[in-house]
Every structure is written in C-alpha cells, then in structure tokens.
Amino acid sequence: MRQVYYNGPIITLENKKVEAILVENGKILKIGTEKEILKNVENTNFEQIDLKGNCLMPSFIDSHSHIVSFAQTLGIAQLQQCSNYEDIINTMKKFKHDNNINNEEWIVGFGYDHNFLKEKKQPTKIDLGKISKTNPIMITHKSGHMGVLNTKALEILGINARTKDPEGGKIGRVDNTNEPNGYLEESAFVSETQKIQINSKEQMIKLIKKAEKIYASYGITTAQEGLTKKIEYDLLKSMADKKILDLDIISYIDIENTDTLVNKEMVGKYYNNYKIGGYKLFLDGSPQGKTAWISKPYEGEENYCGYPLYETKQVENFVNKSAKEKMQLITHCNGDNSAEQLIQACEKYSEIKNYRPVMIHAQLVRKDQLPRMKAINMIPSFFIAHVYYWGDIHIKNLGKRAQDISPIKSAIENGMIYTMHQDTPVLLPNMFETIWCAVNRQTQGGIELGSNQKITVEEAIKGVTINSAYQYFEEKEKGSIKEGKKADFIIVDKNPLDINKEELKNITILCTIKNGKIIYKREKI
Image: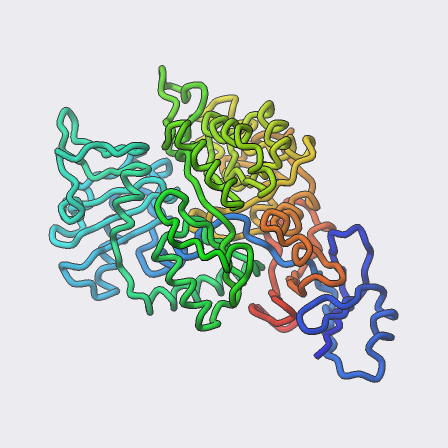
C-alpha cells in the first residue's frame, strides 16, 4: 500500500523544501510538492495521511542507552522523587507491600541521587536495615555507577571485611575499620550487582516490550543496548528469534568479558530488528559522583582527581583488539584524563578510525583534544542533558571548568560529527528535552551554563537523527527524509524550527512511524 503524507510542514534535514511524501513498502519513494506527489498516485490505491498542520520530521535515533537495564527498572521501586533517607525507606517498604514480596526475596530500587538528598551523602546498610532485616536490599544511584546494599545483601554476595577493593572500584567502609558500610562504587558495584537476578526471562521480555513502547512514545525508532553481556544478549536474541521487536535495537558487547557473544553474522547486519554494533568499554565514572578521571583536582579537594578503571596498556589492548576485529568501539569517558587515555590509544592504533570510534558522554573533554579526535574520526556522543540535571552540581564540583562541560559547539566548529543521548535509564529517553538542553544550556537552578556552547535547533535535531544514523553506519537508510531511505518519521504538534526555543521541551509527539507503520499513536491526526 502506498501512503501520501501532506498538509503540514515537513523537516527533511536535506536542505530541501517539501510539501508531501510518497511512501511505499516502508521506504520513501518520492518527495516533492503536493501536486507532484498526487500526480504520482493518480488512478492507484493509496492511503492519504493528512497532517492537519502538524509537523512531520525524521524519527529519533538513540545514540546511547541501555534499553534492557531500563526495562529492569520498570519492575523495581522508583526512587527518583526521594528527597531524603526517610523517603527512600518508605518507598521501598511500600514497594514490598504493594508487590507482595516475602521476607526472603530481594527488594530493589533505582534512581536516588545523594546530591539531591537532604543528607547530601550516600545512605549505608544501617539506613537500609530500617526497611527489612531479612530481605536482601539494593538501591542503585541514578547514575548507575554506584549504590548501596543492606547487611543481608552483602552476606549473599560475600562482601565482608576481608574483601579488597577491586581494580577501578571502591567498597565503602565503616569509619576506622575494614567492615563494609554497604556503599559500593564503580566496578565494585557493577560487577557484584550483575549477579543479582530478580525477574524471569518471560518477565523480562514483557518489560522490554513495555520499554520499547516508552521509547516509541518519545519518537525513537532505533535504540541501543549499550553494555551487552550474556543476559542482555540472550533476551534480545530470543526476541529477535520470535520476531517480536518493534524497534531496531543495536547491541554493544562488553569488550572485557563476553567475546563469545560476538555472532559475526549479526555484526553490522540486522536480524529481525536486532544487530551487534561493536564493543563497549568503560574508562571512568561520573562527574556528579566525583569518580570521573580528570586532570586537575575536584573543587575542595587537595589532590583527588577521580580514577581510571584500567591501566593505559589495557586500554591500548582493547583498542587494538577492536581495530583488528574491525569492530566499532564505543567508550565511556567523562573526564579529560580518561578522554586522553582513549585518544592516545586510538592514535597508536590508527586503523580504528575506519570503524568510527565513539566517545560516550565526553563531558569534560577539552577543546584542545577535539582536533585530535577529529583526526581519528572519533565521534563525541554528548550527554547534554547533564547541563540541566546536574549543572549546579558540576559548578560546585568543577568550578569554572563546568562552563565548557559537553563542548558541543566547539565540536561543530572543528567539523566533527556529534550525537546526543540520555543514557537511559539514567534519564528518560526524552529527545526534545535533550534538544532544549543543547539549545538553552540552562541548569535546574536557572543558571546559563556555557553560553558559548549553545547550538541551533537544527544542529540539535541533527544530533539525534542524521548524525546518529551516521554513528551506526546507517546514514544511507535513516536519519533524514530522502528518497530511498526508510519511512521512519514522527509527527509532532509544533514545528521545532518555528517556535520559541524555550518551548522545545513542550513539543508533543503525536505519532511515531517505523518503516511506514505506526508504532505509537497519541491521538488522531
């Protein structure tokens, strides 16, 4: 069946004015004036889709998130609104009661942030002990880089006074002792808590389907699983086998631990909407958690600069491995020291530039590092919404350096391809909010943070559409409205190029279309 979209503004991102689009079999067959398009379908069966003045534009492409982890959070206690320890305790107790959790099962919560708690510090096992003495309990920080376990959970995981801090991580201790206080940071948290299984495979598949619907409601048709281990791979491969994925999902395999998951037939090639994009590497933590590895101490610290997760030789080996196997490498770097570690490794094994390496977050990358990134075809994928959500914390932790956090305008001035993301589940996959953040650079406290790094609305849209398609080697198929590309669209109630930039985050997505088929619809259009 042919479809004609008409009677509304159309953003193509191809510098071409268009009045109507003709779609056939999920692809864009022709674009042009309404008269031209209607002439093409004379005396044929076709579906008329009247935009009724609403705006049609390319759908969004998620350049970095963790859709399976997000799905997991949908089945646990939500702590984002908690403002103190008491809120956390009460929320977790209510979750246990409402979900009929018995006294031996895990109680898990996600989304607290110590920066915004009244106590201004991490809870401990003593605080979580007020929820239950018999249930193992875990709460995960909003960043995903740290969390807290109660005494029972520590016992189950075998973490005690004899347990040493792992490389690239820390175990919180009771003052003046080796006894764990429940707080785990970076690799100490991530590696241990991955052992915890809460939901069955069947439950997780249902939650992933729910997550897909949420992504689609934000206009996303291509999503990422940004740290794929065996659990994530088995779930997504199983869903692909059953042909039940609605979004295109791209996996990046944990480079350190899961070589066996690299199915060469799926590298760079979709199998029922699922493909392997390459490898994922972590090099440091988060600036709001003061675990990002930076070159000068955090404000108020004499010498502390965060810390790396790997020695330089290890990083070089990972980059060499990716280059030899012709695999794209996406690397988590928040601090300028971790950025330098990655850049130097890629400069040493320069063939990696053929596979479009990506620096995930790139929040504190320095302006002098950008030309070197450009020379090795490295794509910075900015977590630009940090400006709004944690900008005030960054000012406190970084001082004047916070002004240049996520230096996206400088990347553009260096002629670089750039993308933007939300690192879901850290934040909801709200692309228009991210566009608003990139254009306005405003913190929650109302401070304009880095006015010299503001970008235009069109530049911001490109960061979540055509540039993201390029990041995935899909620029010939996705990201803009052009003849021959996939019919991946969104219909929105306002033209983002024509409204006040303050209103960008209030745009409503009416419909999300993938391959010419509606996968989300808010209301009739």
